[in-house]
Picture: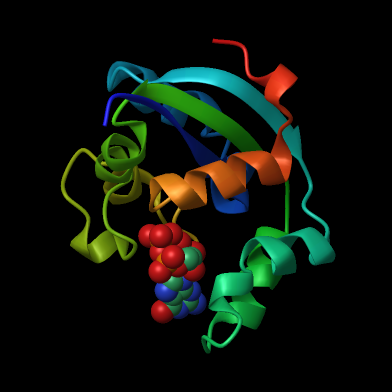
Length: 140
Ligand code: GDP
């Protein structure tokens, strides 16, 4: 894989603590380019749809509640192997297992309030980018 896009979400725990800039610095220091970005408040419907793949999981309801609890910043990151690279920059889902220096190791509060989302495959990245952005909003 070469140049590709991935969807990132800076979650409510991070916007609440004013960490958007600190997280963006980690993204840019890793060589990823923020080619689209907007701050918004997810509706209940949007959060449910976005996390539809998890609807059978026990934490689904809590996750939707958390993701609608405050503003988020949705962004498209572009770069070489952006999907896999951003997963590395984020660190493991559970911050207790996240490698030192990753966003989640430094900033996450818990396995749920873990500061960022990143697409986990190129197919999901296409779907998730399309969920929030139109083609003309991506400015590389
Ligand atoms: P990710 O791809 O690393 O974000 O992890 P998943 O796709 O497995 O989970 C989606 C999101 O659900 C995570 O980022 C967490 O916010 C939340 N989550 C995952 N596992 C748990 C859990 O065991 N408990 C709770 N409360 N939330 C979880």
